[in-house]
Length: 298
Image 1 (cartoon, rainbow, N blue to C red):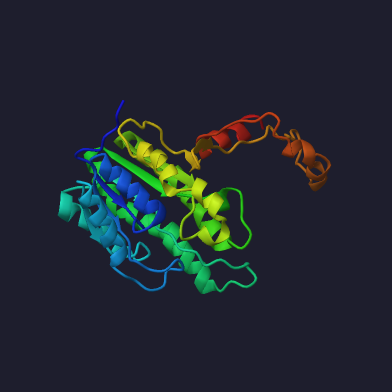
Image 2: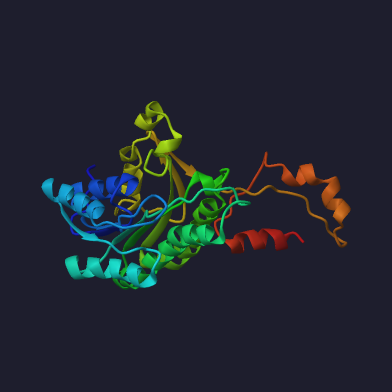
């Protein structure tokens, strides 16, 4: 089976380099018309240059694809809306939104300024919300959409010196969990990607040998699948990198239930190992399912 994106319009944010470029190139090579968004700033988000987006658009066109550039920042609500407007003005609609744009301002929390915390959260979390919010009415009205948010193992599992980045990257998972429920009946599916790749944001931390294994092109097939008609899954987290693909899931232990009296602090302390034991577990797909399990046996 060959998967194509003919007659689909895709927005890829942060597509001037690395993962975003790879996602845009793959979608375009399979027939999608692509808005290549990138303000052209440095890894920390400072500065700006049209060259990054323009170069990727030129590459797509040279390969026979269709693409237009956009230079707005996802961190600005008006800019995010203009990204979607670029798609509509250029290609008539939008079908696919790949929220990839990101910045890094790593420091330990003790040494981090609130400005650096706010900016990273604004780009990764609010930027994802701003762009998706602008596209959402279109997707809902046409009863079709594929949205990818970009999470990270830094948020899911933790990474030293990335409280701003990790916090934002887990926030997009909560965002996805709500949109999955709101969009499902309109055939708008939302999934989260947790990529492992060598990009401008990570290349200084890796050896050339590791970087060769972590090419962005090894991640993009998962993104393209999540953007396809063939994908009927929604509200899930997917790891991808170095040819490895896997689903990530939260699980809850059976825990300890105190009945017939009010629980005490000592009940928790005396049974903490049992409370933490995940050797058997349950997967909940909504907060209501978890509440029902908690209340049902009480």
